[in-house]
Image: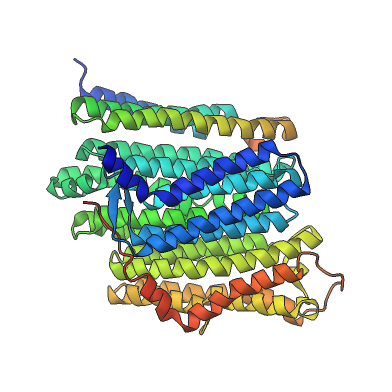
Length: 489
Length: 101
C-alpha cells in the first residue's frame, strides 16, 4: 500500500509543486515588509515555481497513462495537456495583475496566491476519476473564484459580482451534488470505471430515472463553462471583476470545465445507446444556444471587456460542439482549440487592460486611432481579432476548421451550419474594434504607460503562436494525437 | 418502518425547500441558508443510499466532504456579504443592481 502511494505521488509532482508554491508565497507575503525587494522576490518565486511546474508537465506529456491514488485520479496525456494550458494562463494572468492598475497594489500578492489555488482546483478537475474528485475540484475552483471576483473590495460593483457568483455557484453545485447522489444510489459507486461498467446493465426504467440525474450533474459543469441556461452570472461577474480577474476567468475555469465535461461524456456516454442519444441531444442544443446567445449579446456592447466576456461564452459553445461528437477526433480538436484560444484571449485582454488603465474605462472609443500611436499593438490586436473571428490563415481558423470537420465526419450538418453562421456574426463585433483603431481620428497623443518595451515584446511573443499555429498547425495537432482520454483500469 | 424511500422523500423535501428559499427570500443570509439546505439534502441522500443499497464507504466519505466544503463555501459567502453590507448598508438582494444593464 505504501509503495502504491509513493508511486502515485511520483506521478503527482506538478500538483504538489503548485501547492508548495502557494504555501511558500503565503509565507513570503507574511514574513517580509512591503518593500520593492519583497515584490521582486515574490514574483521571482512565483514565475520560477510555475516554470518548474510547466517543465515537469511537459516532460510527463509522453508518459503512459495511469490511474493513481486508488483510481481516484487519472494522469493521462489529455489531462497533462489541459494542465499545461492552465499553467500558461495562470502565469500570464499573474503577469497582467502585476502590471495592471485595476488591482490594488496591496492585494497583488493575494491575487497570485489565489490564482494558483484556482489552478490547483482546475488540475484536480482535469484528472478527476471519481465523483468526489469532480466535486472537490469544482469547489476548489469556485470558492477561490468568488473571492477573486470581489477583489476590488471597496467598490460596489466588484462586491456585487462576487455576491452573484457565490449565490449562483452555491445553487449550481448543490444541484450537481443532488444529481450525483442519485447516480451513486443507482450505480453503487463513485468511481468512474465502476459506474461505466454498471451503466449498461440497467433496465430501461432505471435508465429513464438516471437521465434527470445526469442533467442535474450537467448543471454544475455547465455553470463553470457558462453555457446557456446557466450563463446568467457570466456577463455580470466578468463586468464587475477587475480586468486581470476577467482574463483569468475566461481561460482557466473554462478550460477545466471543458476537460471535465469531455471526460464525463467519454466515460459515461462513450458507448452507443439510449443514454448517449439523449445526452448528445441535450449537449448539441446547449452548444448551439451558447454560441448564438454569446454572439448576439456581444454585438451591442460598449465595453470591450464585456464584449470579450460574451465572445468567450460563444467560444465555449464552439468547444462544446467538439464534445457532441463523442470521439477521439472531437477531443483532439477541443485541445487544439483550447491552445489557440489561450493565446488569442490573452493578447486581447493584455491590450485592453493597458488601454483601460490609461483612460479608466474600456469603451470601444478608447481604442480610436491607436494605429497612429502604437502601430505594433494595433497590428497585434488586429491579428488576434481576425483569429478570434476565424479568418485564415490564422490559428483561429484552423481551430474552427478542426471542430467543423469533426462535426461533419459524424454527420451533424445542422450544427456545423449554425457554427459557420455564428462565425459570420462574430466577425461584425471583432471588426468594429479594428475599424475604430485604424480609421477613427486619434483622441489624444498622450502615451499609454502600459505599453512599455517589455510589455510590448511580451504581447508580441504571445501573438507569435497565434500566427505560427495557423501556418504550422500539424505540429500542435501531432501533440494532441496521443491525448485521448484514459478511462481508468 | 423507516426505509430508503422515506429518507429519499425527506431529502427531496429539503432540496425543494432550499430551492424555494433561494427563489422566495430576499435576504442574502437567508439565501445562503437555502444553499446549506440543498447541500444537506445531498448529504442525507448519500448516507441513505450507503446504508440501504450499497455496502461500501463511498457515500459516507462523500457526505463528510460535503459538510467540510459547505462550511468553506459559507465562510467565503458570508465574507462577501459583509463586504457588500459595508459598502451598500443593506443585505437585500434587490439592492444588488449595479451590474444590471
